[in-house]
Length: 253
Image (cartoon, rainbow, N blue to C red; front, top):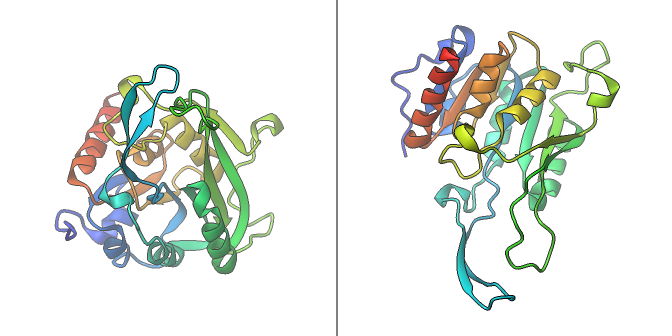
């Protein structure tokens, strides 16, 4: 899919607007942006864990059920490394990455962030309402991983980090999978409360946030409510429209 960049001035995406949805290929658009434009890259890239429909058997009833873990073509064999390289150029000197990832990707991200920046810590989202374990042969998947790193190792004075009360500064974030009115059609949507808490700790008012894999727009909605500038890029026109609608609705709240 080709980028649709005609309706978005490139400079304004960073310098003038508060939040903006860019519909197009993230890597191609990122190449058009100036160096050191962003304080934080907060994003949820493809995990490359999709599977075609599989048949699972309920061993108690003997019934068979089709359970789909196919999130779409975008979640098959996506190469994240060129996007990481470009995001490094776009981060300010002591800018940060917070990247959601699958357990299978921890080693790859840990190596890249260590080689190309200053890896800081693994953060964990604990889902207080995890999905059932359909096959009943293992644990319920109740956590997701976030990798946190700086572009360059900061001194205490230079670190861009908002330390709150000690009891609030554990590396585990406990929030339910989003549902109700917040839930959209996006299959891997993250809860707004989780993104808000990450933004509160890893950015300040008037900072500029980049989300190259915007999805349904949660990063922009949270940034708007916390007075952060943000640019989100999403290749799906359908999800771009959802993100724009959510931004508009947040303005009316």
